[in-house]
Image (cartoon, rainbow, N blue to C red; front, side, top):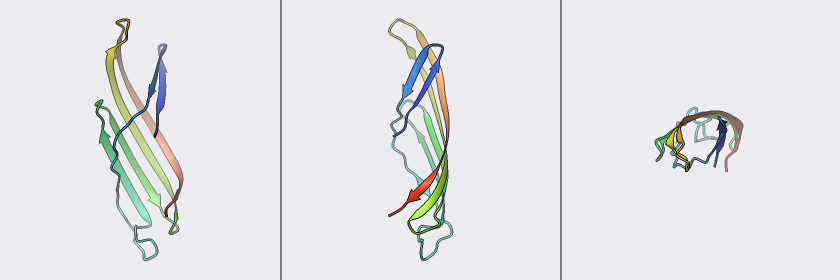
Length: 107
């Protein structure tokens, strides 16, 4: 689960996106030791109920049967329109860019 926060002109947003993700992996450089492939690019693209957009692109290099390293880019776009309880109009677009790296353990 992830979340992000933003503040602009004395307005504070805390967004917790909830969406079903389907990740597509392509097994490349398949060996007997690593049948899922040593190199695994992945792609995820989801359009949410609130008309936002979430996209992930990544790459996993599995250097051992149980261990690998990965890098991933995530982009989120969320337009927001509405009003506050005191009739203040709200019109904003929130966008995030995340770069992740890490170690993967597969069992």
